[in-house]
Image (cartoon, rainbow, N blue to C red; front, top):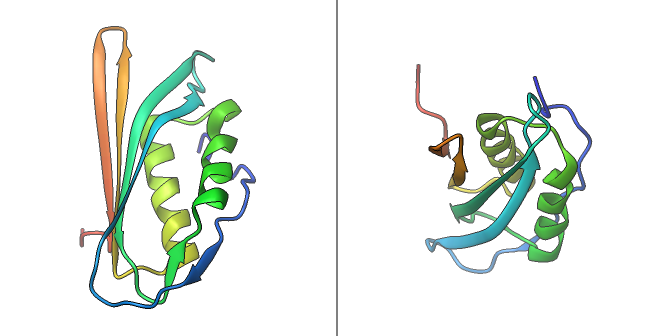
Length: 120
């Protein structure tokens, strides 16, 4: 459950005025903390979504993501929580979050999650 229930700033939105287009947001300096080792984790995050009635307000998204800087959270939890929080805020047609994490112990991880979530 590492990091999944931590309080984070709200992601604000604004009214979308056009249908049927995609928005891609790249965050080249995402940082969080490994809950097991306490060492920093770094990633390039890419958030892509098709807005429905609301678009993400970028300043509040930046403040939301900066709150991860001192948060102990696993890669997988971070990517999935970001996706859930974006969906909760904007209710997009679809969304995808990908985190390309820098090597730790010689291993690089890429985590991707999408909404709607696939059926089990």
